[in-house]
Length: 351
Figure (tube, rainbow, N blue to C red):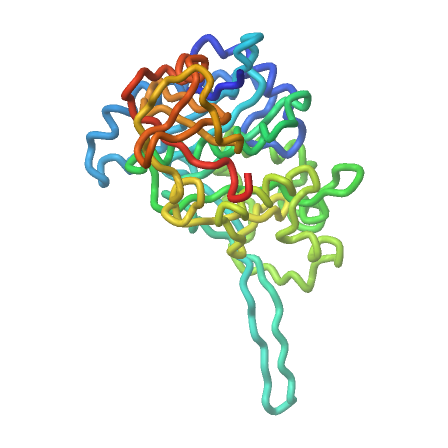
């Protein structure tokens, strides 16, 4: 069975192996040992402090950014095969920069000229918002809806503990690059201010984003001055990330004209209360049965624990309106017993 749980100290080497598979453009988990070790320590610390943070009022809770990083584990082999994370409030401990895509109008009645052009403006509008991040699934497990399961488990955690997160959620999509993995947006814009290639600049941002403010222009950038291939790539998702974008859009996320400053990839935003998995999920009492699974749709099921959170995907059946039947194996992996509360929701609207 496949289970998703909070990352633990024992996963340190597994996380390092995954970091060596993510590839260029995966800013949040790169093959940099201090970075990987720091991320694991940050996540383990965040989970350990989460019960204490839950008890704080909103003002005190929002003074720091916590990382809730989950791993997907194959219980048959004990291997960690994927990661998925949530940052509770970006930009509080390090600047968070994006471009806002705006429109500028230039008009002259005397000359009978009217033009409207797009501009890029450096901004920090997402400071304090929660971010879905660090989603990676090993290639040999990219089947059987595992990718959707891994992505949406985070929404089940947010549904259980909304007080730990902001009321707005966003995800940064990898931007378009050509067959040689060259980003037209970077080549046309970023390279002129950083004088390094895309891979090096991306690596640097994973360590410290402060240099962005020091080097990038603070004035609007007119996109009509950029080459056609760069202008056309703004807000376009990398081919390998397109399925993830479609999945989030099916959940209620949408593009709101914010893009990454390096590759021009889009940011997708949503109000937490409007996200399908969160809005449609319900709590049920657990009934453990041997062979009474009648609903063959794929369901997400998660226990109600914070530090011992568990989420699985599978079939179930119902007892009236307030109870679900699950198998002993499912109950064991979820670490629930008869009468416990369980959150459940169909994997998708048509699953």
